[in-house]
Length: 329
Ligand SMILES: [Zn+2]
Ligand SMILES: [Zn+2]
Image 1 (cartoon, rainbow, N blue to C red):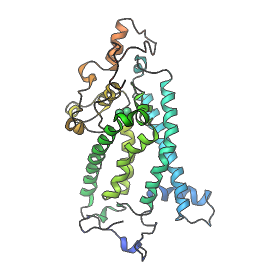
Image 2: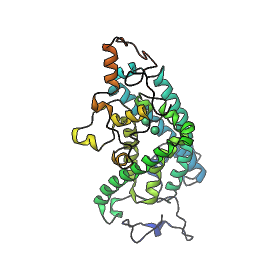
Image 3: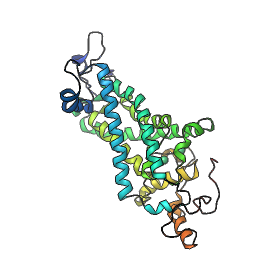
Image 4: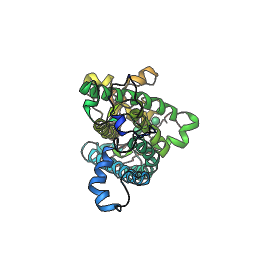
């Protein structure tokens, strides 16, 4: 809870600071923690002798809430996308793996609890008031316009950070142990969205958690952005390659990210193509050039190499059906 004269947020800090200047937990008690304590943990779980502000109690609650939230978001959004958006024809692609959906789910559900440990450490510092999260729009001298500004700034900040973290994860000394598990899925399904090695998943999520320690951010907006980020991560793995015309140049959608899975060292971006263009890693999605995974499937079906209800027809063929390999191998 650092107060800066240049900070546009009018903090009510003095009211909540101890004499030593160390903030108490109450004012910045995380919204979710408050709700969970009020409706579940205080009346039904913890003994009344254990105060809500107890550090150990807060850490345990955060671990439970974070793990439940991550599982519900991942499985819920993944399932909705898999049922209603994902084109199941993609499972006929030669590079779609045997039992891939279950393997993706198993990998993600093993990693998410491990990722939650360092994540909860950061949430704990947020809850304890060390971040610049604020409760009321009126606390900002710029009101709603600052809320709108922070939304854009959050997306630009995290987009840039994730691009460079992702490129770092592709470094030859790092890639094999930490990022390769996410590239096992050449034709990802929505369930590949969170299927990362724990360190990979934590590092790529880190910019979201660092932002509110560096810049003021409204708590409800933070929660909304956190959900949006999860929706977006699922959406770039959902095989729905459509992007509205003029946005195709700017937005990094499933078409772009599919090429990242297929061709390894292109389209590292998260929301926008900006950093790929600056960093020289932009590739016009093969989907937009009539050479995407579905085009490959249609071609192979026409050639009689895949029959209608068959999946994983020829594991030696690549997206072009020519049997060449991506650069990583
Ligand atoms: Zn990658
Ligand atoms: Zn991916």
